[in-house]
Image 1 (cartoon, rainbow, N blue to C red):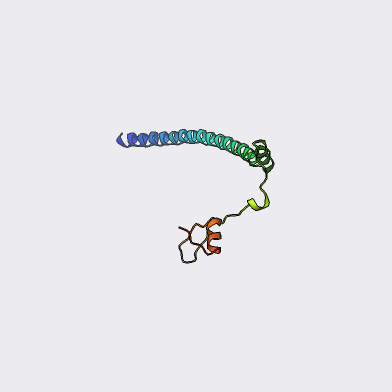
Image 2: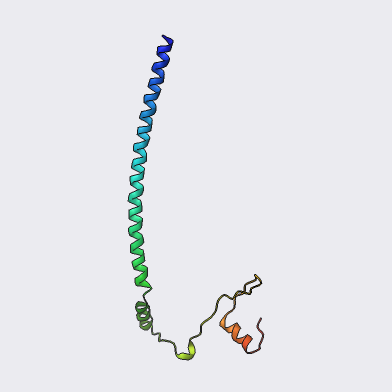
Length: 111
């Protein structure tokens, strides 16, 4: 009688284990479906934001906005390119602007 009861208990635990695994499978399946939907939405939003970024940073748009604010293209002498980062080779890097480079070229010191 005890052996039969133990066998039934093992069978019931096995069946309950299989049912628990199936319930977990359904739960994970729903979660996976939610995540796939979320990923699709995020990818769609990412594409929309890339299009918006491209339209906002388009040179023609920026130029038309600047012209609308009364700005004009720079004259030939007004445009200077600044080197922002100059590596020293010794491991210590320094920030140097075009203004500092011009002072160095002219033989002047700067603070």
